Image (cartoon, rainbow, N blue to C red; front, side):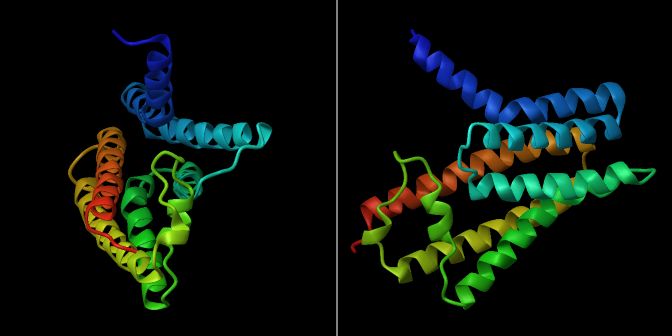
Length: 193
């Protein structure tokens, strides 16, 4: 039996991660792409306002996702027939992969910045981790983003926009969790500072 605190935690997890894609999917099927895209943009802007109101820090994950949602969603709202929002998951992952690759080549491990935004319970103690390890982690993430970009490019032309947004949330969230869990497992099992 779950405690009330556990129920609240799961409810918050679902609301933070799946409420928008589910609402997008329903709106897409009931009212079409433009209202669904407008909903996504409005929810993103509302989230930004909530962060600002509570003066809570905004994670790099949120900055990247929100920026692309507003850019692609806003563009599609301005044109007659929306066509760019479906490419947003591909472009977002491709750009992230490229940024990560550039930081690997420049020997500036951006994975450190993302790791510092993780919750305390899973955040690594960065002061004890060598830069060479963080560069390798950044390279692994680079490959991950490029592979995910290719998958989302394929899906963009295989499923409707509503299904794409739901798949993006499921695939993105689950593979992100697997990548973080895999790095934690590797670091705890094999990494020696």
